[in-house]
Length: 77
Image (cartoon, rainbow, N blue to C red; front, side, top):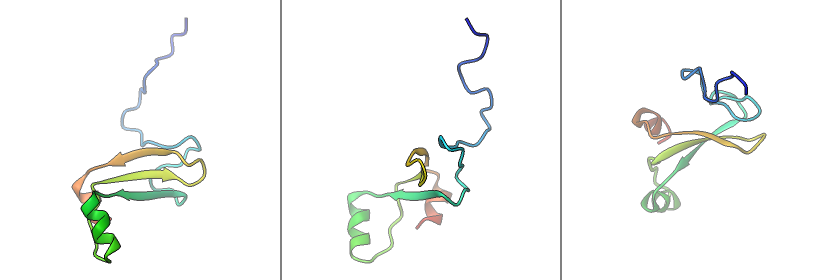
């Protein structure tokens, strides 16, 4: 049996995808997730605040992090 821990020992480490890209990498897209009303507003050309922002790597197509932090949501408004 191995003595290596099975959980992350660095909780402050920023999340990254399989390729090693983090949220700030240029190949990572921040994608807004909207409610029905939000999508309706976008369809009509009105800006809408997302309910959640998901971070997806465009290389490996992995969604590796998401946030509902109001400051981040407002920056994607």
